Length: 423
Image 1 (spheres, rainbow, N blue to C red):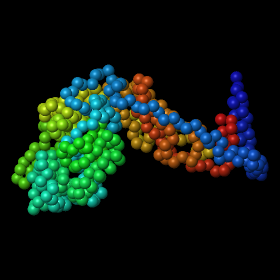
Image 2: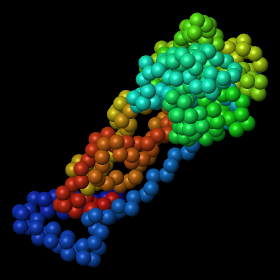
Image 3: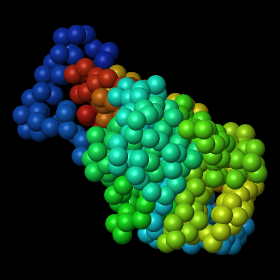
């Protein structure tokens, strides 16, 4: 049975074919007649159905991938913790992720991040000598033992900061980078906001106790992942096991560097209020997992519980590439363009973390405006790609144009404009 829409569409296709087959003069007359119609409806060419329905935002993804796993999360002796896949940025599992805590020496991850930024931007160099102020020299707590009359390089300070957890090194680096501790603290908070660390506030570069100096394990995971991703050339500092400065040898407090050869960072921390804390990361094959654990009762507990969480995250979850770089997810009809269709997907590989054995159950769903109107630029976001698993949103990201489509000429736009009346 032929519907009215089918009849109208077929009739119109015949009309268009006839117009295109006519001689130039006849084609001109048809176009002139169409232009006369524009006096009644001036939007006929440029805006027929242009008010395409706005693509609704996809539902929020699940909070953690462990919600889709039958394997229970581990019971850990810690106040709060989180496990994150570094490649995808997805949270694997978590407990009290937004509880505000003292960051203690985990603060120094932000200090190092800002110094690495300055090195990358050529505002500092590793060989640069830094004068040691009285403030840096007198800073209490763990120290690398710098002295006012003995210049120290940025490289040495970074080793003192990361390996020895020197508070004096943190202050010296803050002064070298920001001019003063107060200015550097402002930069720390500005960077925290840029990264999306919404529950953090920094007042110093070393992590010494201050009622206003707070963060969460979720925020710390965002920061640690950013450091790993943004500064791979400097991440090597975190795997160094010892450092000698001023004839004093100190070892890295991250005991996982000796316990597990796949662990190559990151940072320990302790205050009476924070308890024993550890940000740890391991690279096994192509996967990198990051854990943040705070509030353990002993040094041994923070090491053992962090390793337990790392092992559980690797053993029970996979990270897989669903689509390669610029691999089409869907092909879409394009109107008023030089081409009648374009490929949509992502300019970057689409990688996702899932419970083991569930990769084949992932269902990609693409939503986009219809009609899709030219011009379209490569990389332009025209909808959403939602990855569904067990009826829940595993991940959602923009749907991008992979092949640009320029705007068609006047006659091509006119033809599509009329077609859209019957679409």
